[in-house]
Length: 180
Image (cartoon, rainbow, N blue to C red; front, side, top):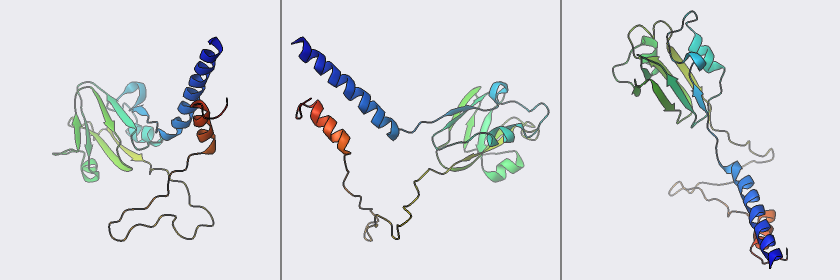
């Protein structure tokens, strides 16, 4: 009786370890960046390119976030044209709560400026480039795409899911269909 309980507990423990290690590859890990590091979102003291340099030293992915820490200021996400002019009547995003978090929800360029008059002109602005989603390269011998879209509705037919043999065997063993 005690050995059956021990064997069952071992199976559950092993299942949890394998299950968590397999599924860690299916989850995307996002990063939160603190803009300006310890200095936060302030008017640059000497280097007016401070935020451009900070952004260029980081690699931003879709779903990463940028956190702006500041006092008596604001942060705006604007268009490229508004970025060049250092002003915006209708920003895409506005916050002035002193601790703002913005989610980078797509690949491409994001333009940030301070909303306080004169701050942007003195260098409190930044461009962040979010990288394209990574896709595996096609096989070297592939001449046609593996999945053809349906001409009628644009849907792509996907192949049936294949369960790796080790997972299948483990599942069957765990459930008691194979001897342990």
